[in-house]
Length: 468
Ligand SMILES: C[S@@+](CC[C@H](N)C(=O)[O-])C[C@H]1O[C@@H](n2cnc3c(N)ncnc32)[C@H](O)[C@@H]1O
Image 1 (cartoon, protein in one colour):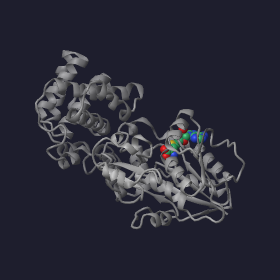
Image 2 (tube, rainbow, N blue to C red; image 1 turned 90 degrees about the horizontal axis):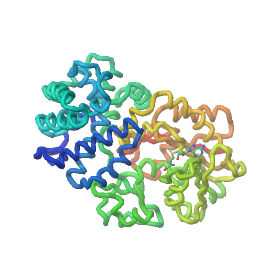
Image 3 (spheres, rainbow, N blue to C red; image 1 turned 45 degrees about the vertical axis):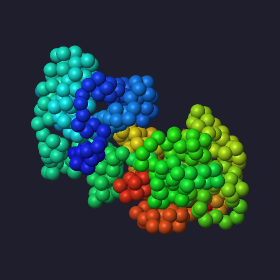
Image 4 (tube, rainbow, N blue to C red; image 1 turned 45 degrees about the horizontal axis):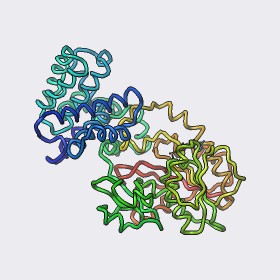
């Protein structure tokens, strides 16, 4: 979002539209609150915990949709809502008990970011405050939320993110992103598009499926209700419904996979190569998105993939995504058990901040600070250096991150290549456009950068590097 834009765009049928309040509604709000608290107190992931809570509590259909909207919307919009709440509370936010502050955020989201009538949003939130913090705090919550409800989101934004504020602060509050992320994203995408990019982070991503070649067909996915996707020849978009209900997904022949994630794997497989093309490796394979696709492609070409991940349980997830011809090992990609120059194609999908996938993980933006970029840098460089050692002369390495942060993308590649004179940068946008004619907006090369607001994908980065 920004919540205000979302609010204008949402049709009347949206979950949370006018409806009676009552016990199921209380359970919906309580569930959203419990998940938000778990995210806060024990670093839970909302996208994993919420489905389990919905199941436990028997919430389905509209109630499940509303609980999801309230949970995700509150977590995403926290930056904007805190700025509004700070003006409506006579107590500093840091002096409000953490559970009560989460109740207020949930209330602010309902008032400003949904079509729930403000009086119902306030009344139900005050009830929740009473059960969480007692009657005295419920009175306080009532006073704060009544002030919140005096303006709509557009009017509040003119106050908390005024046009004459400095650009980083304004964007940070209006689009609910920490300032360090706003700055990093602007460095990567440019000032002209930063607002669109941040807004795209707040929109619900579409569910993209991959039909693993040779194992499932797009027709199967279309028959199950999916629609064609714009870029990957193996992708389909599921507008509604549960992917787990599709046979091919249940069998592991198809899977949920972002389209940019498919495209970077395809680019590694299609990058021009002289000589043998039989041995492929994925050094950071868990949980197996790209390895699943690479494994299927390798089998079609009579090549073999070795997929590694340092975490044994993630290597276990890879096993489920690949076919029997693929080797899977729990191993440190920086300390290879194979000889140098063993492979023809190598994927390094490096651990990164994940700033390219903020659409999918509503709480992620508040979890990490800028220090995480510096912390990951040495590992990213080491993994890329190992990949270049592992590929034979003439072979190709794909360096990929699900982050557009320059310090995780081109700076890493440029640093590593500065120390060697045997690596050529391939034109990644051209390789991608050869797979998906009409795919543009990836940058001028040699590196390629996908963007949520341009491509409807995660912000995935790709460098294609050939050993000479
Ligand atoms: C961005 S994720 C990879 C996603 C995966 N390629 C996919 O498409 O599903 C990065 C992975 O690198 C793994 N990793 C971190 N350090 C590693 C190392 N030293 N060697 C191998 N894998 C490592 C993490 O456990 C994590 O699973």
